[in-house]
Length: 378
Image 1: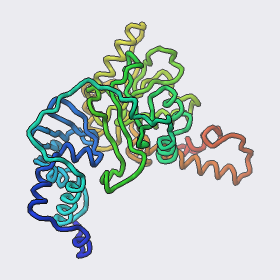
Image 2: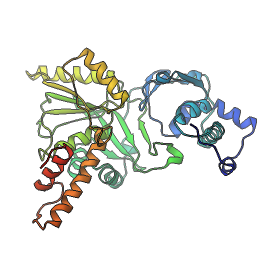
Image 3: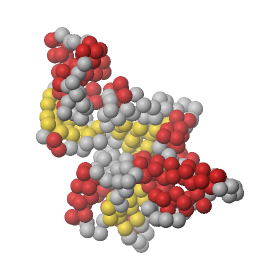
């Protein structure tokens, strides 16, 4: 049921004139989505697809959108804000309409019109990187907010897979699997929360313009020495892929070996197919073959449906499902593991057992945390 709006809520948002509402209706969906940090991927000269919800399709030339999974469509930024961005907000119709109008007008989105966007080859602009090479905002966000270990952050940064831009956002660099000197695209993740600008999610999340279709962020296990991994694990986001790898360090200090970790930027079969073919071709030249394929997608309806779809075509693909006890994705599991590690440290400290190593590398703390996480008695 919708919550009833109070008079204070109604008065807190200005009412708008017919001209303002008309302007919001005509504003560009593409401009608005960009300003609000809604992650889109260009899929053609005149089409974009949502990253968080890949059934979302935007046609800029008609200033039109379709959210196919819900059977919703509309024209103009106001309709988009109402029926997509605020779709799941528990607001009265009046408050939702006023909020959507206010958001569109304040976004500064230009008037939508008939135009076609040409897709050009991706060019990585190094001027976008922090001019002093700093990683402070990315490090704080990845380590403190997301629970990623310092060693993993350092490995990714040293391999030029993770950078910080001028605004402090994290850049996950899409390296070409066949030529790691070549950049095919970039996934951008904001490192600070601002719900007013970025809506319910709170942070910026984008794929850079013209990023190569069918590809995404990936990294290989350390110590491959130029060889291609024989195992592949697919995830929805870079953070989830990195979290899964970091969790594997609980068993092996250098992490899961002989594995390629791929972020599909959502649930994209095109990325799955590209990396399967590319990896298989690389291994064939090296006299090897793919040994295993796993899907570490979210444990929710969308992730389960995607896993079922892939497994119906490739029965040997494993669904590496996060435990619902700890959350729907692998970063939720990692953060739960960090909390258990912290409790393990406190337990060991109280028992006055000598602790010579840090929390992350203490074998007693790790074993205790791992046993708790896997639901086994120590």
